[in-house]
Amino acid sequence: MTRSRRQGLLLVYTGDGKGKTTAALGTALRALGYNWKICMVQFIKGTWKYGEMESIATFGEQFELHRMGAGFYKIMDDDLPEEVHREAAAAAIELLVGKLQAGAHDLVIADELNVAFSTGLIDESAFRRVLEARPAPVHLIVTGRGAPDFLIEEADLVTEMREIKHPFTGGTLAQPGIDY
Image 1 (cartoon, rainbow, N blue to C red):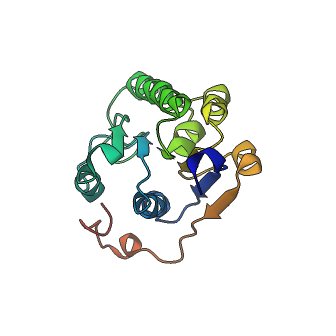
Image 2 (cartoon, rainbow, N blue to C red; image 1 turned 90 degrees about the vertical axis):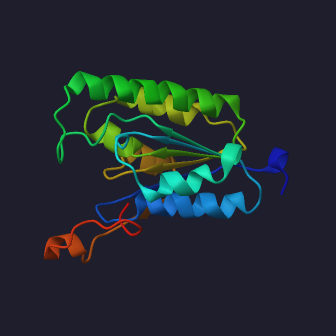
Image 3 (cartoon, one colour; image 1 turned 120 degrees about the horizontal axis):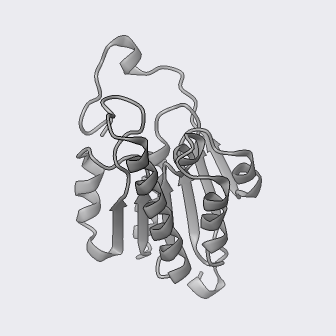
């Protein structure tokens, strides 16, 4: 199907289980096989080094990664003022809206956008700006726990990851290559 005839979809990966970003990256990997251009804007994540960064870099200009978050918000070792996180989220919204409006990418991933909303770093109007900025042929994936009802209603596909068992609850720490 040519890009001009494509109807872009809104896909949502949410839930308390692991694998939301991984599912989005799996879709991106599939799309790269068709020579699509990908853009991923990450909210929340931003200070850790993780394997996906290295893999994405191998695709060059075909896959843009923008790590916009100031780090994990209100968890782990977060000691940054809330305003720093709010400013990072606002900058990520502006970048994401601009990337969508430009229409230069076939697939855009808003990683952890749901978390930025559910924690109050962005408001509903900012979230809706993202949804409204998407041109018809562009696919948009939104990830993160706590997808809001208005997003679920508008989405073409919603998948909820549900934790059944996780090694961390048994005392196993996150491992490179599996968890990051």
